[in-house]
Length: 353
Image (cartoon, rainbow, N blue to C red; front, side, top):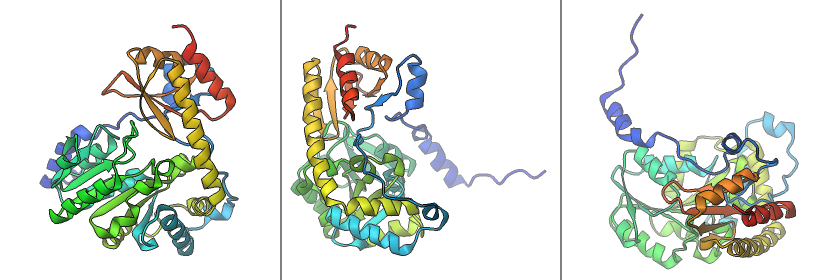
């Protein structure tokens, strides 16, 4: 029996360097793990751990043929045209559709020459993990100025998990610095759909080395569809598109995404409803004695010295919220959906310890 070919030395070194980033991070939405941890919790589980709209877009009619056939180029073109209009991109040529932002993060990190990946933190940890796996030296910055000169500068805006918002003009100034020094700026606008639209940099990607990530699933409440977009200068967009191949997203995703982007009445009413629900959640958490740290219209981040106790009490009541290993005084609450869910959250928060 012949032995398998050895791993090439450079690849072996790269794999060893990335080993610390190989372990998957803990995220929200793992209801299976919640049921194991809280086996006696009442059903259904109220999942507030993901920051996803609890009132998803009503899915258009999807037929068996939509699953049976390869996605049509014309349907893909329609989706990117509608996405470009929704995100304010210069054109459909600037928009790249993908099956989730996670894949785009990995592709962007791989396309960027290895160097320093500066990430404005604390923030969504997958950006650092993807950069490390691609061989970059990852540093966390506390200010935009510290990102200047990085091979890849990453800003999540609005930030996850605290909702911090960086002004558009400040990001464009950073992009100009990056352009002068041969670096790239990645702006993750996953929560911008429920934020101040005027602060998006999607319309300015042709002016500098900017890639904007946009998440369809959060605002439209269809995270399981796995549909996201990169908005970038045409050359960068072409490179990303080539890496993804001819059928980057499924036929049903093309159909549902196009219907949702074209439904302006639903979009407008949903923004109003999410804003009202966010105010209601802020009041509920404040009444429970929790300190508001930050928010978007899809989540609230709170601080408490009793955060672990509150997490356990909510879990026993069948309510999942987001914990953070790096700061155990913080909890993030997404929006409840039904009146019954709102009441269950209220009852669990005021229940005696």
